[in-house]
Length: 330
Image (cartoon, helix red, strand yellow):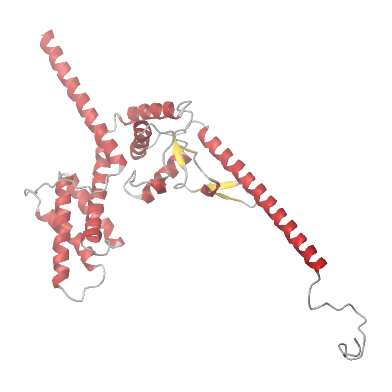
C-alpha cells in the first residue's frame, strides 16, 4: 500500500472508511432500518387505536347525553323536526354527513353546519356512526378534542328513546307540541326560507343559464331583503320567482348592449332590477310562474309548509265540529 502512495508514504494511525460499504455493514444497516420501520408502525397503530377509542367514547357520550337545559328556538325546532321526518320517512338509523347531501336543511351549507353545531352543543342531537377517526381533531395524546360537524352522521340522543326510530318518533312529537302555538313564527320562517329560495334561483339563473358571475356578496343582503319584503307584503313565492326571472333577463340584455362593464356588473344590476320590479308591481297584478326544479328547496321548507297545512286542516275540522255541535244543540 505504501508503494501505491495511497497514504503518501505514511500509514494511517486512525481508522479509514472504505469507499464501499461491506456486506456485514449493509446487513446491519438494513436490520436497523427494518427495526425502525417496525417501531414506527407499532407507534402508528397504537396512536390509531387511541384515536379510535377516544372517538368512540366521544360518540357514546354524545348519544347518551342528558336532557337539554333549554328548548330550541322556533327556527331550530323546525330544523330538528325536518331531521326527524327525514329519519322516519327514510327508515334511517342516522342522517348525513352534511357534506355528502345533495340538498340543504336550512338553505345554505354554512347555516346547516351552524344549526347542527348549536343543536349538538345543546344536546338536542347526537353524533353517531358511521364515522371515522378523520372526522375528529386530536391533541398530542391522541384524544379527540373537536369534531367536523359536516363529516359525521347524526341521530337523536337516547334520552328521547332507546332506539333510533323510537328517539325520532318521540322527538317529532315533542317538537310538534312545542311548535303548536308558534304559528306566526313558523310563517315568518317560511317567508325567510322563500326569500332565500328566490335569491338562490336568481343567482342560479345568472350563473347556470346566462353564464354570468354570481351575485356579488355585498349585494346578497339587498336581494334577500327585497324578496322578503315582497313576501311579507303578500306576494306569493311564485310571483317573486317570476320577478327574479324578469330582473335577470333585463340585466343580461342591458349587459349585452353596454360595453366596458366591470365583472359582476350584470349580476349586481339584477338585484337592483329585482327591487325595482317589486316596487313597480306594488298594487298591480303579478303573474305566477311554476316553481322550477332549479329553485332550491331546503328540507325545513317542506316541513314548515306541511306543519302549517296540518294545523290549518285541524282548525278547519274543529270549526266544522263546533258548528255542527251548536246546530244539534240549539
